[in-house]
Image (cartoon, rainbow, N blue to C red):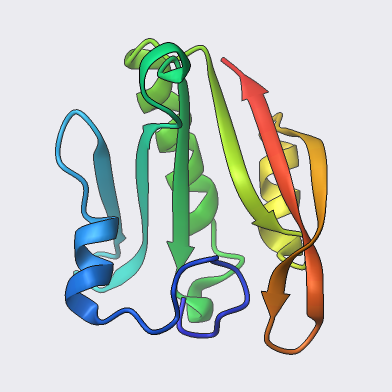
Length: 141
């Protein structure tokens, strides 16, 4: 998250604010992937995308330690979310803001059956690529 190239979070938030935003209480969920030695590999959170009439669609966020990219951590977290959302009775999952430069995540989500519904042009200020699009991605459950 610190690189500022994937999440559209306030880059000036402190650790306490970030923890409060990421660590969700039930029935929402936060998961942490660890290796056999207990080292954190990645984390995910999941929740209803909207309240009220939109609460049957889930959403979530994923972070993976860059030194663990390509090792299946992101896939395990995303598959866990798919399982959780199905068990909770959600009808779909929608990701509202996937930076179009986040090609690893996009490829993973596509491999899990997500499709791009729209691209919001220049909606993300990437630290090295400038203004890039944000994808809205969706998958029915």
